[in-house]
Image (cartoon, rainbow, N blue to C red; front, side, top):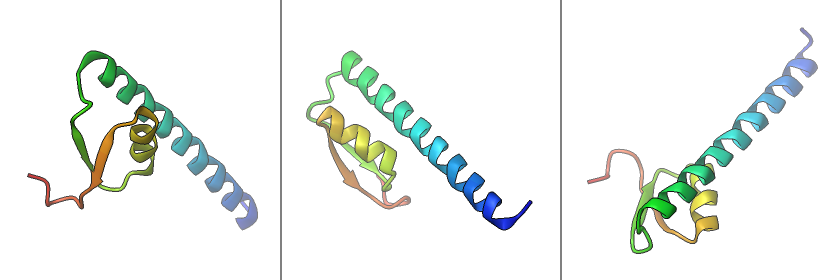
Length: 71
């Protein structure tokens, strides 16, 4: 397979998975807020863009915390 086709395929695949992860994160957070009172919670995340977008959309607080320092 030529490299230009491979790059376009990889880019397309990466974009599809990113959209799927973002949608799943938003659905998870929406369901979480419906079932539990998390308005005062601060979510610790490791910089995952899909979670940051979902948390912002739901109006929830978060803090970026590198993996390994969560306690």
